[in-house]
Image (cartoon, rainbow, N blue to C red; front, side, top):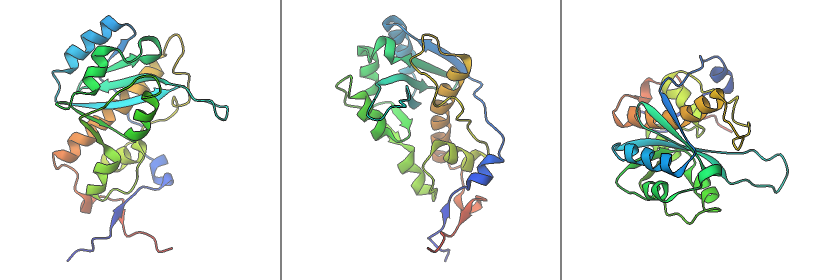
Length: 210
């Protein structure tokens, strides 16, 4: 019988040597309530979407910012909702509280906590990848490492600490934000379709004895 104590994790040195992945889908920037309503009408045709948020980084202790950007990705298009401009409008709130559409994200408790600073919301239909990947022996919890383990590519984090409340989001910012949401969706579909076989992973090993 196979040892059940194997884990799958990737070292930083191995991660560094992987090729960088890129987002090649379409991006729609949402900065008005009318655009948000139209985007939600399109997203309601999806059964499963990827989800992520970005918050302006704070370099001062105790200074916290509200969520500036919310990314919701279908299979071929990612919508970037500029919450610092439109807030969580009724159409978006309804979508986030709709239990009939699966929304896949990472570290969702943190996202929800920040969102609730500016809007009373009761998110439903969410799946947290940090919990899901445990069923596949994956021990890492960052999106970058989970993606690398499954697809053999790394997600660049070069835009993470940029200003997400800037008047205009640059193309690199938009591509980075879209990739994170789309990556969550891709990971979920890959796992649920049985395409990842833990015992065949090159990053599978017994945990170190401390």
